[in-house]
Length: 335
Image (cartoon, rainbow, N blue to C red; front, side, top):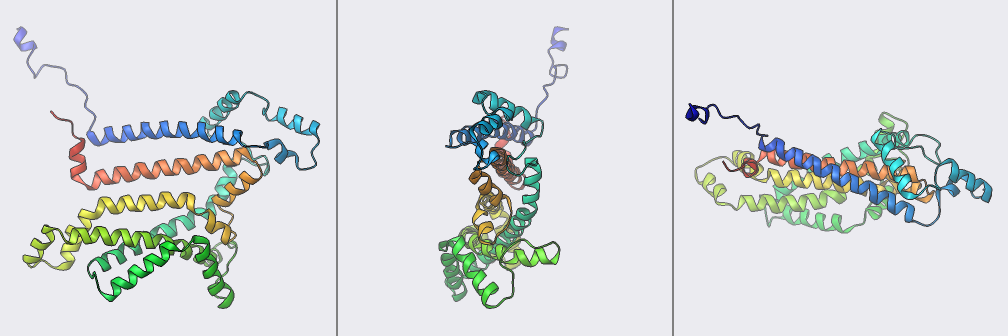
């Protein structure tokens, strides 16, 4: 009887979390920890800076009495740890606070600015990764040719040119000399917005596409030199089949990682482009908040950017594990 009770068939089963789900949970826990540390750093650095937000609220002509009243009304005289607890409590409730200078919820200001930044961000990301990947594949198959040398020259010039210099040059050529495209603002919606965003998108795409093309050329070239490609050619398989089933498949993880890295870099790198073209986006909002000592704006924008970076990295990790069975096999626990 005791032997029956000890048999594997009657033993209680453990609830086992699938490897991919376990990895996602671990990444989520790490992301929460990172965001918690980010909130502490943001709060500490902002309050360690010289000056004070009461001056931004009261203006230059504010009297000492008015400044003190502003500090009392906004709890700026409380100890920093109390201010942080209040900030974190409001944050957990979805409240980013109220802008000192704009007199509106920070979430409203960010949503308005995001309406300008997101189209620029997404259009540039798609163009730079898709065109850069295609150019990298094209030149990897024709290394040493004139086209390859021309593309390499373009990548060197594009990667070496500062963003603001490229933006000023394109604005002068297409906006001032030729008069084809507007050079300032985001337009009034619809087709007008599209035409206003052409130059900013083109500027950022040129800079990012240089790095994307160079990376893709190197990675695709490495796969094309592998034995499996040589064996596939010896069997008489078409170039299209080799590219689709071998080259792209074996380069998928690296290209997804590259696309994620480009998107992460762009989340904080559009400030210069927005300044050159007078776009009231997230970057301009952050610069204005820092200049005016608008602490809720700076905290809100910085936190939103941090969340975007964490989410992008999490999505990239998940996609890499989904498309590459070798990574999934590495997650499996030994029996």
